[in-house]
Image (cartoon, rainbow, N blue to C red; front, side, top):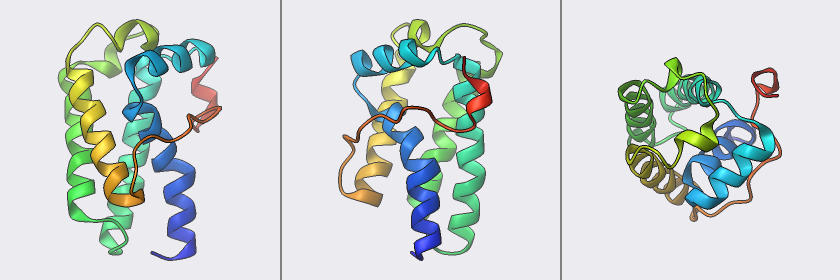
Length: 131
């Protein structure tokens, strides 16, 4: 992985996956603090999926990680996350599918970085989705 790819990984993908992988209580606290909307989170997943596809094409992301990201995106579709206007803090404990998302995010992080428990970022770009 080149330095540029590593920077992209840390800047975009790992930050969002850290949020998706976090324990439910941490997710609720973080999303409440940042007033994250469920639909905005889905937009972020779609964004990192596009980044991941490019990285996979260049051989800097393992196919398994890309497949797990696609599965997360599919789960978001099944939960109709993009159609929800509410706050993620309210949704994250309401649907058991979030547990599957959490497991997939953790698996990607462990494969890429060797661990899944990362500090939660102050914000996940693009920032205009929050607030």
